Length: 114
Length: 112
Image 1 (cartoon, rainbow over the protein chains, first blue to last red):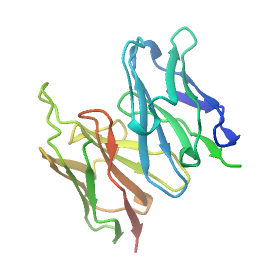
Image 2 (cartoon, rainbow over the protein chains, first blue to last red):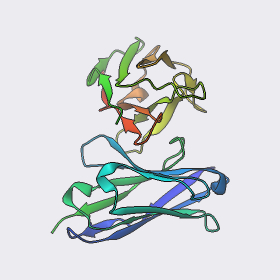
Image 3 (cartoon, helix red, strand yellow):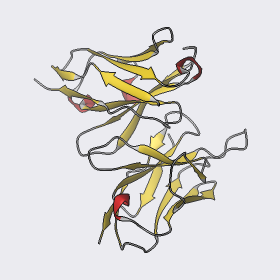
């Protein structure tokens, strides 16, 4: 059974940082691209970033470029999202998902507020 | 960026009756590999989204046959042949033809 479990969310002040993690199991993690998608409270879905199976290709939505960094550790079956210079508009539930969003985690809430 | 436009924004469906949702993209979603990268997701209340249809018309594993997708180029449709009470939630289309991947605004489906 495929499982994706996010962690690392919480309350952070504007300008602060958080590191989200996603632990994967039940599939051959090292062969899948992995993505992060977020959903602001009461809003729709926004694709955030994607990383190739070997980490050699990475893409971001413009609104997070230069502030967020996606990375992965294939030895530990995990993907991460380092979020710096956080803004109020980054407040959202962050989901990790497999490459074409076939499988999703339950999400972790990030709240940016003073 | 490719803009995805879904209609209607909301839908009140009658159990046992058909329902459909339209999704239009601002550019063709046909890729050079011959595949069209349009997918549909359902987010039930309090849950993460889950995949229903990928590449326009391919039902994902475990998705009931009452869900079907069609379309090409820039115009796509999700159809539910006979709506059931468990189909409530918000439906999203999404393009993965090019980054940034983009979603439609969502269609909220409720049951009459």
